[in-house]
Length: 248
Image (cartoon, rainbow, N blue to C red; front, side, top):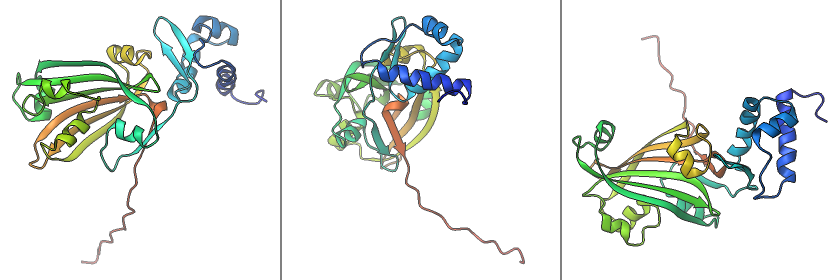
């Protein structure tokens, strides 16, 4: 029964039932029509739909409509050890492939120069690509590296989408650690188009500095993940309390 719950919760229940009854691949009614049918504003409807998009149950394609995609496979990974999406997907037998790939030379701006410890206007390679899971976009990855670390020939010979795996297989430079910041961000226009979502939809963003055994940063990356397709966890050791003697 939905009579005794908050109107917003009732809306989510009704939407859940509608999504459950709609076959994967089929389009839901347009936002204006659905908002009118349910007696809510488009803003309220859009906010409620975000929760289902975050679970990977629907996908909104700008200018086209909202489609039911079914319950997705979830890539789960611990954050204690750095590994690629491809490696994490392989552990659950999920089909991962690379979508659109763009490789181009850029000149380092202030942010990139600071991250990589190089001068501004240093030549860099930027590798942008879409990662597909079950043949639909689930992540957008950007790697920026100095030319001496990665060359165009490296990326033209069987590149599968993972710069990390490429460097590990090559064995040089010797990778040691990654410093990563994790934030929830609103999808910029370009990334939203690539992932076939709406601009402003929430994504998980990992911004990372990958260092070699000399402490040099060899890769500056930004990875955008659609939340419903990924589950990250951390295993932490429980520390003990430190008692301070205040009596001198």
